[in-house]
Length: 398
Image 1 (cartoon, helix red, strand yellow):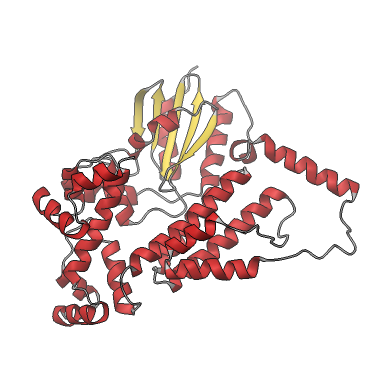
Image 2 (image 1 turned 90 degrees about the horizontal axis):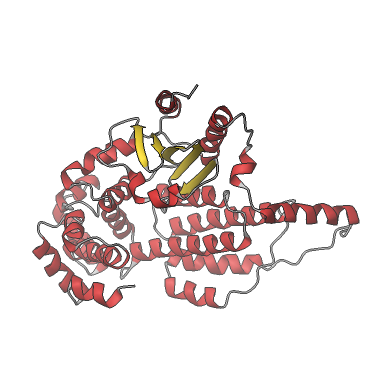
């Protein structure tokens, strides 16, 4: 008797609070969501997700959203996206932009994404292992079978046990380990808190070997723990540099979730460098061209969280409980830049990123960034970037 796949999908949505879809081959049979979505974010990552051929697997998107996959008898269940810490509204608006969600439907899309319950990746995978047991002839998979499938992990464990058996270290009086982490930590965290991306790139090009303390019983856990320490230090340094606490902690949590799914030394090291660079770039963007002051950082954080809207100085002043004339005058006094110039220059920086790293048309970027017309966008871009959007894209095309 064939299982009722639609019934199972509906039940999983009710139990988990996340979207569930059922495909037969490449064809969608049914899909269920906690709340309506004007577009399914799965569209952006369908190629990567459909490449998963194992009974149970997962894919993590650039926004750290996780999709779980279950394959059985030509049927594919896809659960997600979900994450322990869901993306903020600005990130969700950018996701809508990448999905080509019509401007008038973006608010509904963000609301629909907000209705998805946060769920740790480990919990999602455990749910899939349970479904797999029911649908794939009683196959029993544990979380470690899904998240850690690298033969390298088994080899590491074998070597650790061999060392213990051979007593290659003195259990009574272990040799004192050399540490050189304090000076490196102080240097790196100073770079992050200043948002000095140029200094970070120079340091990474000649990074010395790090001799850290032993904080785990095996090599993989050691690497992950050191990564978590670095994430914690980086988030604190970024907060000192002006990043909002919730932004810094959410970014740190997302990276920590991802490292727990990695099993290779190279993967973890690359993710760590990427994380430090992202924290540094975030601070750099908040502090660029300005002296540090609470007002300047508050304004920078506000603009960053409203880049995809027509930003109103009146509304900003209201959010800060200040009058518009006082806010404008004080910002100009502290930074030497008008609020309008700052807002438009920040939108131009975001436009540069989108022109360089996305395939979106200028009209779509213009609408996403809240410009009244593509002509207005082109005029502003030329003023602050020194060239037209087309010239910039041609110059920086990959």
